[in-house]
Length: 197
Image (cartoon, rainbow, N blue to C red; front, side, top):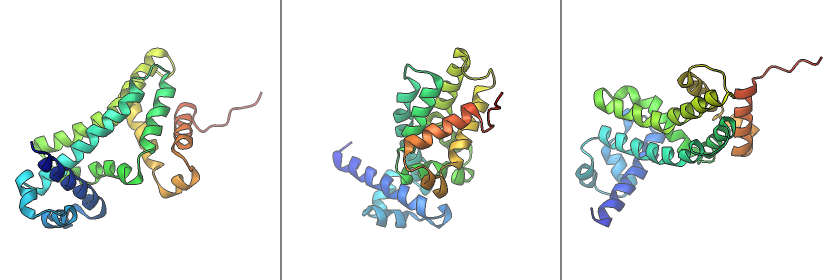
């Protein structure tokens, strides 16, 4: 593929990401994305046959990049808690814009069916819950995490992180590392006060 085509596709995907973040899926047209990308509508249709296909490509490219970035934490030779803290810090270090892109999966996945929906859900799971599940499984093996369903534990941790993506939480913790330390501490230690003897 020519460099000009790659640049055009990249511009379209960037414009799609911004547009889908700031507008409801149903309100978005290919014309609006073309205008945002600075290309013609024909250029978009040359590369993407529909808004749905453009959304899927935009999300899968983003989620694959996220998966690759978080792999650093998964493959680290350290305890499950240290790896989970690193993974969380890496995720929280991403811009607010990038963190909100992942929320589009939940917001818009109901618009897709069949293999398209399967691809979107699989890309999401490969990017976030599956790496966390791997860390949970390793923690169970090493004895630092209770012997429970690692998939369920991973989804519980994802829920804890998602609740903390609010504006209030961002103001409370002024940097990603502090927030990551806090979230993994809450997950591993709970919120109960230790009883003095």
